[in-house]
Length: 429
Image (cartoon, rainbow, N blue to C red; front, side):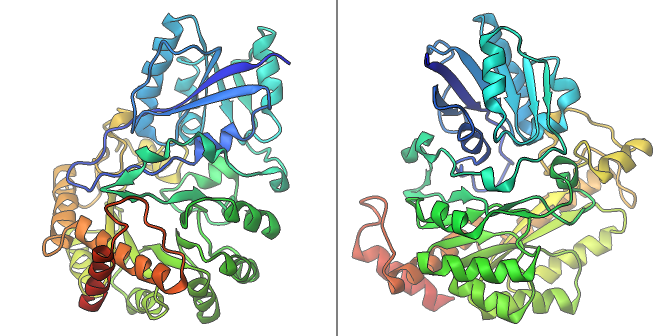
């Protein structure tokens, strides 16, 4: 069959001011690329690390977008290709969240998961009958059909921060049984937890030529028996990984640590003893914690936020990530705030979780913005975000040295002095 050249693009977005900037290899585009027919020759451009050459030869363009802050840039990219007579398809999380507007800028918008469905889309394009919308929302393909991502498309040298290669992204499941107030997951994938077969997870993870991973599942705390089985199965791989929340269970935390849990993202939503003990239990198992702190909820006053920020210094977080409530489309937060007339900014470039776009209940929008900026400054006042990240890197490097999996990625790190620095920093901790 005749080869089709497809240009796959991941648009850039403006990073948040004052935070350490690094770029992870994106997951969505390479997961999508794995679902294309064999006769489609894919070239991939992540605009966050390289420029797009709009004059490169291609037959068809696909734009994969995860964030609302990528949407308008995606539209601009599509316009450039339209000037050159190319058809453009878009997909990904933000294509689904902003589908009503997306159809005005793209030749075709794909909604939902693409496994088993791209053959028809490509054939429609070949036959000049491409549909404006391919809507598979709520029609998830069998989880067994989810295969390895096309990680061969990454330009590896572009994904490092000061000589340290970034983690690869990986998923062991899809869907989420929870429906959190600011989250769109229940809209995007329903509230049904769909774990991949364990043998496929192990096979896929083992094939990744990177010892450090980010398991991007919405939450690992979905099913205790599954968590136990997963951690026991991946432990022999000796991978070191980051994830969202792990079940607060002694046996599961111990198994996670043995399976290579490096650090977790854990929501810190109040100043309770439970949160303090929750963080301690992670640390007791050698698992670092990056607290995720959401500011601007209706039950928060200015004093509540200040107390929460002070509390973070008491619980020994390794890192903290602050966000302001952002009403992304198709979330309960968006529906409520829109109905109440409290959203005043609909510029999607500002929907970056660091800019106030609605009227808070208990303070002005300017004051919430000031508290957000203060939170970052306060937490990282004595030690910068980059320094705290380096401590976590030291922790994982020491563990890799101990189990024989440490592989320096460049000449600057492949020396004994770095190893001594690691040990020195661990002792300081």
